[in-house]
Length: 266
Ligand code: PHE
Ligand code: CO
Image: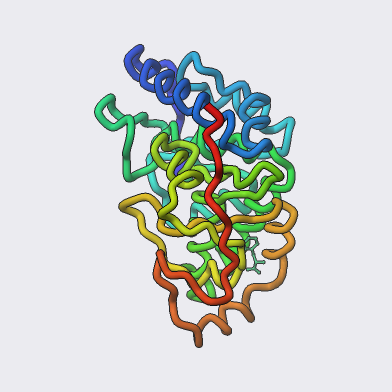
């Protein structure tokens, strides 16, 4: 439908060089900051530092690990198409790479965000199932006119999620791992709130798309996230109708706040 060819041969040496730059600095940054499943997924995928990866090669590893598949798309796709892909274990990824002058910040997803950011976590069986369930839930939310609520869950987990570990919070959100500045900020800066994950709390919380997040939600484990999202959301959407939205930086009396990380170790 909206699927296209990646046309891997058409990338220029300069574009491969941009990938290498982004890859090398994130790899160093994330060794102590990303969660173990992300780092393992990255290693097992073989998304190497040598250049923009060919989707066909990634798909071999991905298919073997979790039966997911990357499909190339021309850019942001309509919500129904996006959910339909996820529900069928297909991850839509853009093919274009940012320009040299956009290394640090880009508002729309490019191939570095979509591949380096999202695909390593899809190598993890629990997270892979969560993403499929999210796609199915998205199709349902569309029918129930509750997409704004469900979109917040994606934002605060898939894109900007943190997970608790014995060594403190670690990153799994794609929007963070593909950003050098936010990888440090989300863990080590005193400013943002790090709040223990609570499903309805998250679905009530507005988010910002133009700057680092003011609040991050911290899951205990991917099993916790998967279990919390299993119930039929129809009743949750009804309940949310009567509840006010929460501002991005707001802290509520019931929130469990986690401390900033004592990183870095170097
Ligand atoms: N259980 C949710 C529903 O009934 C679907 C869902 C699963 C949403 C996992 C997000 C993540 O709508
Ligand atoms: Co993304």
